[in-house]
Image (cartoon, rainbow, N blue to C red; front, side, top):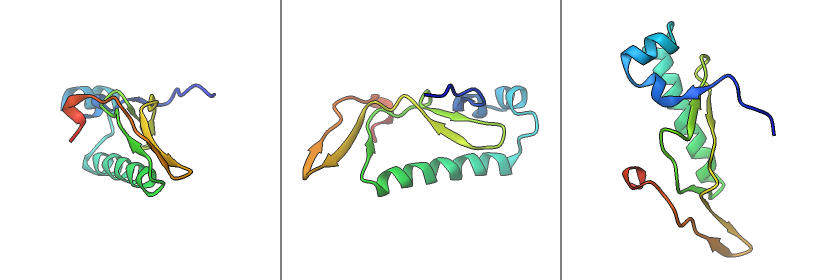
Length: 96
């Protein structure tokens, strides 16, 4: 597996201070692209009937190009051969 080197945890894009330091050229369009890319990523997973059970701010990386990377998703729910393999973990703050 390749090492991911060009992303930082998404929480670095949340606040104006950390965003200014980490993404000095970020503007509203950058934030919109990040949000859109996250929504597309989850839509793709959902279209494959994959449910991510343990997603939180430590599971998404963002690059200076507004691309997003999902990592540490070993807690997923999938369906295979007519059987549902449920995820049994999750972070309470993010379950809804």
